[in-house]
Length: 275
Image (cartoon, rainbow, N blue to C red):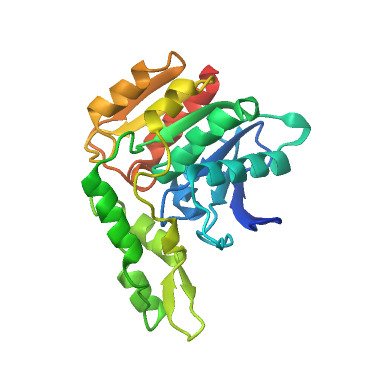
C-alpha cells in the first residue's frame, strides 16, 4: 500500500481527505467516527490489498476539514459530503464501496438511502442502532464541556484517550493517531481537531428505518464486546433488510479501525469481492 496523499475538496464546507494507492482498480470511501479523523484508517490501509484505492475523508468539523457555522452536523449533512467526494474523485458516474465507523457509519447509511446509485455497497461498523435517554444525556454533557487545551504538543499527545476507553489498541497505533489529532490554538496552546458541536444526542437518524429502506448490498460489522452496537439490535437490523449481512468480530471492542484493522480489511475486501 502506498503512502497517503493529502487532498483538498474545495466548496462549502472545504473538506480534506487522504488517498492511498491511487492506481487501485476499485475504490473504497472510508468515513471515521465522532472526534476522530481520516488518519484512523491508516492501520487498515496497511493491511488491505493493492487492488483497492482508498479515500479517507476528514468529516466536516473534524481533522483538517472546515467547521460549519451555523452548525450542520446531521447524518444527512455528512451524506451530502460523501456524495460530493464521490462526484469529485470518481469520474464517469463510477461507484464505490462506502464504509463508516460509529457516527461515520450513520452518515454512510443516510448516504446509501439518499444516493443508492453512487455506491456498489455500504459497510456500517459498530454503529448505535438504537439509543437511550442515558446515552443521549451523556452525549449532550460531552458537548457542553469546555474545550480542553494543553500547553505543548507533547503534553497533548500524552493526554490522548479513546472514548469509550476500552479494547487492546497497539500503543504504536495510538501514538500515531494522537500525533495527528491536535491543532495549535490562536494563543499557542494545543487542542483536539474537532468541533464539539458535532456531538449530538439520538444521532439525528432513525437507524432501523434507514437500514430497512436501503436498496443496495449492506454489511453490518459488530465488535463482540461492544456496548454501542448490541447483539440484539444488530440482528434486528440485519433481519430488517434482505440486502443486509452481519458479521461479528470476536473478542473486540468499539474502536475496530484501531484495535482490529486487519480483520476489518479482510471483511471489507471480501464484501467488495462478493458484489
